[in-house]
Length: 271
Ligand code: GLP
Image (tube, rainbow, N blue to C red; front, side, top):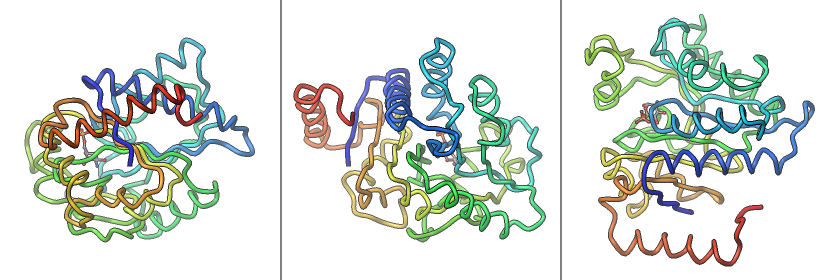
């Protein structure tokens, strides 16, 4: 696992956006063979989305041949509800870039048959040959997408009941009223994320420090579902300084050193 530590969310966003752009350009995608990008919602990816929009507007990157799959969506929230993940994605990214509407995939939390919706989502990902790069955030309890503590580490897209911790954390978007937060969601599974050719997790703020410690220094555990990325062959965690506050000094030094040495030897790592 590679851990990149930046000063603040702005630098994290710039780094992530640059990485995504480089990957898309390197893949040289076409309509027939698009680049498949997995996307999260939440505050963590916001600076990266802002930077992607800026770079798109400056003519640096086109998303015409990019296909996206979002991680999750609440059940029962209308798509035009300001807190739905549909609304979030259009507002914060899709409305500002040139991605064709038909390339966007977000789970439908209002589908009549939710189980069928989840199964078909997996099939759609498969049809596109799998996800090239899955971006993600994590909850303060170390969950990825809505794979709450105790989720199977080989889970697939499905309906999940949200934990009290998550409902509480997300109530900030619902007038701080936990009774307004949906209690169920559709989410890709840990296994779905793990199948991506690359996984990049964004972790910012002191509120995530405990989770980062578990994921980096602890073992793999279904109680911190994102810890499964220890098994992934190509995983990157991009964090800011406050998120590393609970890591051992030695761990931080170790990963910073590796990045510094690699940057000197291979200036454009991964190209
Ligand atoms: C929700 C989402 C996750 C996201 C998490 C953290 O629970 N389902 O995908 O990673 O929130 O959100 P934030 O980045 O706002 O802290």
